[in-house]
Length: 123
Image 1 (cartoon, one colour):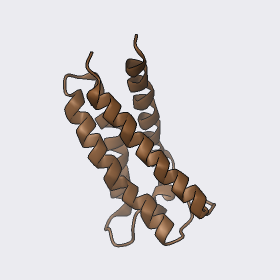
Image 2 (cartoon, helix red, strand yellow):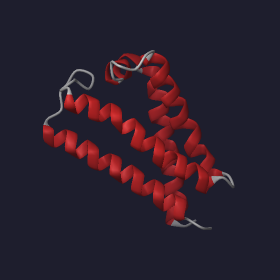
Image 3 (tube, one colour):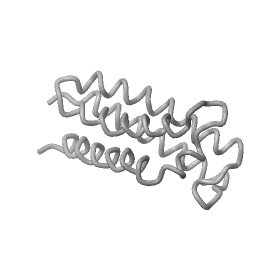
Image 4 (cartoon, helix red, strand yellow):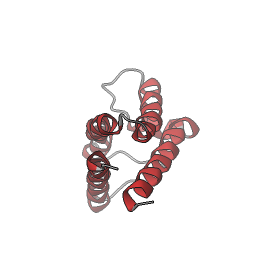
C-alpha cells in the first residue's frame, strides 16, 4: 500500500473523529458559530455530518469531486475559526494567543494541502 493511500485512511479517521465530536461536545461548537448565523446547533451538527461523509467519498470513484468539495468546505469552515480569532472568543475554556491562532490557520492550510494531494492521487 502506498503512502497516499495510507494518508487517505488517516484523513478519513481524523475527520470522522472531528465530525463525531460535533455531537459529543455541542456546547464547544455552539460557541464558535458566528452570532449572525441562525440555528448554531444545526449549523455545527450539519458541519459534523459533512466532516464524516465527504472524506468517506475518497474511497469511491468520486474521490476527485469529493476532494474539491472538501477544499471548499475547509475554506468555508475556517470562517468560524477566524470569527473566534477576530472577536477574541474562547475555544472551550481557553483563549488562544495570536501565535496559536496563526498556527491554527497554518493547520487549516495543511488540511487543504493534504486534500489537494488526495485530489491529485491517481492509483
